[in-house]
Length: 265
Ligand code: KIV
Ligand code: NA
Image (cartoon, rainbow, N blue to C red; front, side, top):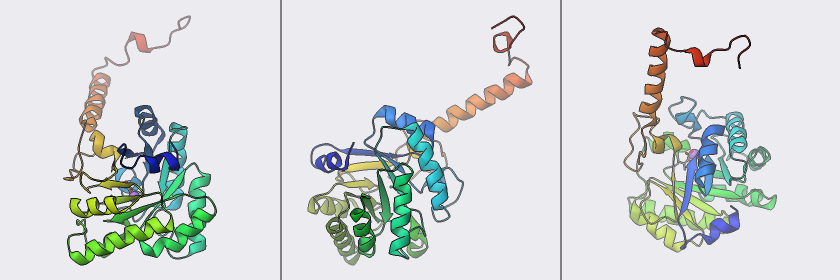
C-alpha cells in the first residue's frame, strides 16, 4: 500500500482501516489484508487503561508503534501524534512527526483543521505524509464537554466543510471524519478529491475505520452506536482463563503430555 494507491481508491474501492497497538494484533490485521493499520492514540483507552486519549505520551505511542511494525512488517501504518506532541510549536510538531516516521510509521495523523496547516506543510516538505482528523476529535474532549456528534448546526457544518477543504489544500492525503452526521460526511466526501475515512460518519465516506477492540468485542462495556462487534473475544478469553484455573485447582493440568522427563523428549 502507498499514498498513491490510497488516493486512487476514492470512488473505486472502500478503504479499510483498523487500529492496532501491539505485535500480535498487527499480525492479524496484516494477515486479513486491511488497507491501513492505525496506531491510534486510542491506545490510551483500549490498552493503557486511561479514560481518554489525553494522557497518552509520544514515548508510549513510539513503543506501541514499534511493536505494531514488528508484527506487520509489510503494512501501511499511520500513527497518531498524541495530545501535546504538536500544535504549540511548528518545530516541535514536525520533529515529533518525524520521530513517528523514524520508528516505523508511513504517515502521521493530526487532529484538527486550518490551525494545523503550517505544521502539515512543513511535514510534507521533509517527506512526512499527513492524514487529517475532523469532527469529534477526542484530544479536545475538554472543549467539546463530552462525546457529542458534530456537524448538526449550520455553522458547524460550514466549519467542518471549510476545514476539510483547507486540509486538502494543505496537502493531507486523507481525512478521518469522526462522529459527524451522515449528511455532512457525504457532502465533504463529494467535495473533496482525497478520500475520507469515517468512524460514526455514516455510509458515504470513502473508507471506514474501527478500533480493533470494538470489532472483536474485547471491551464489553463499550457499545457505541457507530461500532459493530463481530466477535466476543472477551468471553472467549475469559472462558480460557477460567478453564486453566479450574484445571490447575483440580490438578488436571499439567498432565503427562505437558511434562519433561529424563530421557524423554
Ligand atoms: O485513535 C484512534 O483510534 C483514532 C480513530 C478513532 C480514527 O483516531
Ligand atoms: Na486517535
